[in-house]
Length: 137
Image (cartoon, rainbow, N blue to C red; front, side):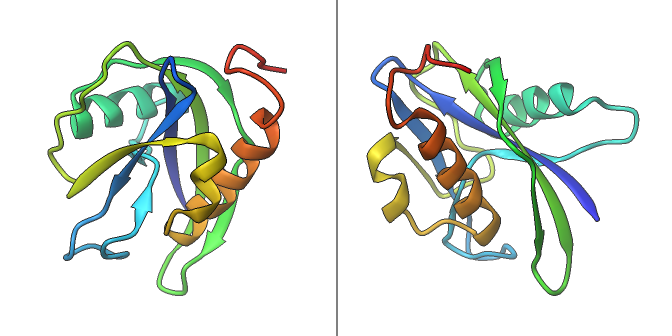
């Protein structure tokens, strides 16, 4: 089981940042929440902050956490640990992904996500569909 963190990064318009994987990846052209594998000796929080900085050159603040998602892709099993994050940065600098989009929360269900990220999007949508981003419970 591979531990992977991801960031559901929100902006002031209650939009969420998603990134598109490249052609030569496990899930070509699928969208995902940015993040990556937990390094030895690293906390989950340290991992998500490091990965977002490496992949997007963005500073984030962790505001909450969503339920972890276990997923079996056949060739690998992961546990995806999602954090809800805010940022003041509007433009990521892509170093590993093809594209990025800021997506309205209500449009998350129509995104072509990697399989595990579908569950993260659903959990996020269910938690925040009734109020603004400051509504962390």
